[in-house]
Length: 114
Length: 117
Image (cartoon, rainbow over all chains, first blue to last red; front, side, top):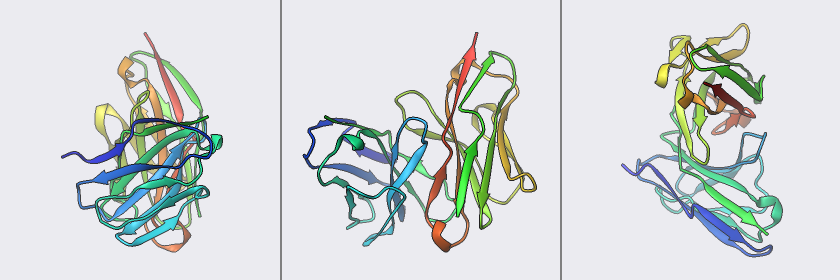
């Protein structure tokens, strides 16, 4: 099983550029989410989805867009990159949204905006 | 609403001595609680989770945690530290019910564990 796969692993962007971080899972999980990790702040939720066609905002959604057209894929789009979006991004999935379900994380995507 | 506080940003121990990483939480609903470990430049790996069954939870690599509702705590322990335990550890809370916390994990700020030879 591949689990949760994120691409790219490393990316450098110029301010104002747009890009998409890809996330795919092969576990037929309904719940998927994106987090960003910044030093001393743990992981903060950007957007999440409880199933295909359903998305919602998390704690820090500004500057990011998501869609969920299939159960397997949950891409994260940066519309116009800013230096404040330099971070490590993690995609996660679980069988359901409620507590108790084990959450599986991707390996992370290191993004630098210059 | 839910929140997590990891009481120590850094913990340093000697190899072979006990490890204690402290976590307090708050949750409007019955919570599920997790501990994750992150080694440098790696993703997050689940150590253990509490989901309203036994209050003492055993995880991988000799770690365990005890859910104490009266103290709203979920501290992570290990009897004897190993060099390979050096990493960052995150305490995480998730709601078991609806409301504004539905579908959301809340992470603590992380505790960096250093293990000295």
